[in-house]
Length: 337
Image (cartoon, rainbow, N blue to C red; front, side):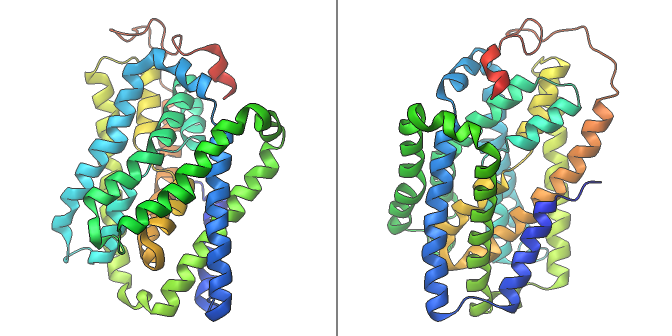
């Protein structure tokens, strides 16, 4: 089972925040740097996302609607149902974090990687992840405002302004400037990826520092963490089963079904952490804990599933109502996405 090295870095950052939390002036500096880092992240997201390639992917619209429904409808419904587990398995703050994780968009990189390993429809996975990230810029804050309300760490009109300034405006700016900076971003993808990850580490350090200073970690016991892990394991299992058998019920072929399963059952740590810092403010540390744990869990479980799917016999029966050979409807340009 793979352990994501980045998760180890995140845990190390949490440990650093526990031992040396930012206080006073240092906290103000870290908060300002974190705000700038979030804006930079979403600017780069906008600069990377090819609108043309995403529009090309609309040719396989049934698959993308299915993934979006899993990400922004089925997941949140399950998150709301988990309310019944408070206070037996979850504390209210942990439940708010669990509900938030059900609202964030799907992943791109890991969905593509696992779909490729399992011999699924990789171009569709690329487009599905891109669509999910694009929709999530607007859908996640709106869903958080509706479902979390005032309980989400003080979600208010001020939070809406922050979302527009820190998330949406930089993303739109990146999209508008992509014509001139897109090639630069593509050439320096690896270096800018380090900027992405470093920015997220800064966001995590700032959030967990605030949590340590405010003493929120006294609210989390080992038993509560165990309960959270058990709930997340059930949530992941339900989504993996729903996406796989749901795709079959909707008459998608094997390759499309694999893309739906991996893109529709996962949540993006890279998108969720910055959003949580904006939406939850000083309460972000507990809000992001369920997402961090779920991220590692989904990587471990999906790696095993992808390996097993790679040994499946080839399927000759193609999906009905919408595709010839699975994957053939997605434009060739998306393969480089």
